[in-house]
Length: 89
Length: 506
Image (cartoon, rainbow over all chains, first blue to last red):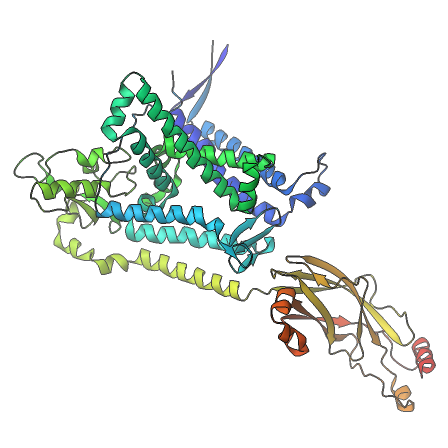
């Protein structure tokens, strides 16, 4: 049994839709979040094992938001039927 | 089998010259100059435009923003979005065709391609032929130039967030930190792929603005349109279109404008310049393809009402500029911009908040005096350090005792300062009559009073020593907040403790 991913639109469009809007939103979320919370102060609150510089904090935050956004829009693409996941024998 | 990219035919846009392309190049050059030169401007000894993420402060010429001013930045983004709506409603996709970084960088990369590989025909031929030494040399030089330009774009980008001379210096000596190197490479790669390979596909498949522009355009927005009534039938004496195909070959998105308004059109006006050129050469009036509104272009296959002269009159310049949509956008834009400027100008550079100590109303520590404890929250939004001075108003004989002698606020600093305000205990009526010295009268309990803060900036004091010397001119910023001072509840003579203490004092 294999899992087959079927696309109804060109892959370029689907990847674009999954990656680009979350990129824009992650930029905004990063600005909003880190204007309130300083990453160097945040690491005292969070049980984080490493000392981070501010740049590292911002970068990790940005990619975290981006990853969340990508998973969200990927699910949307799947639920809206742009990508179909099927099992084949 | 599905390809990663849309099965897509590579577009080799033909170079075209004309008045619109001259304006476009000018606009593109301005955008590039602004982007590449802005980080190099110095202003009062620091980079003029610097969004310093490490220090959490943002400098734009004389204005310095701190994280707590974030709402102003969000506000500015809303104004920017509204400007885009306004421009789109009036002039169509003028942003896309003339100033969008995607278009500008694509044009720059295309110019490099033209420089190394030749014109559109030579490039197509080169891609169709098997590889030879000449092709390899030309393609390699193109990629080197592209990579250098992309790298420079990446370094400049990071230079907006960290002092650029420092970034460049460390980049040259390979001493950049891992994150900085990563961001430079990330941004360079994005530029390289977007402007070198993806090009018009970004506008067609990724850009959300291209998708929702139809909601902002109406029949009176300016678009690029082909005059179908005048042009058709093609290649005949009846129609003006000679079907030379220049409008298709110059189009950077590879569409045929003669099929009507399409979402792929980025409004670059290359087809207008190309067509006008052909019209002049074949002794026909220009403007077969032109900037027009959907109502005004007589009949481009989309709108049949266009033939009606009544509709055409409606789309004069005046009615185009003053239709409800534009007026509403303009009103909103003006309102937000004026409020933004007012907020910016009236932004207090030194702020003060007073919080009372909740654990006890008052303490009696020295004979005849009552202490109240407060927590001050001071924020310095000025770009230089402030020496602060605290005082009280409306509370006679009061003194401020600092638990910490820290009286200097660094730029952008938010200081929580616990203070003690000490005031003499009000005299009971009979005690004040007997005493020779006039006792301070506090009329109420609790007594409302003000805590006042004055800040003197270091830079001002240094650059204007004569002003700094005279005490009256030194106060630059001041704020005061009203709060309450609590005395012991009973101020009557039978309050043994206080009377006893007062007698001792006398």
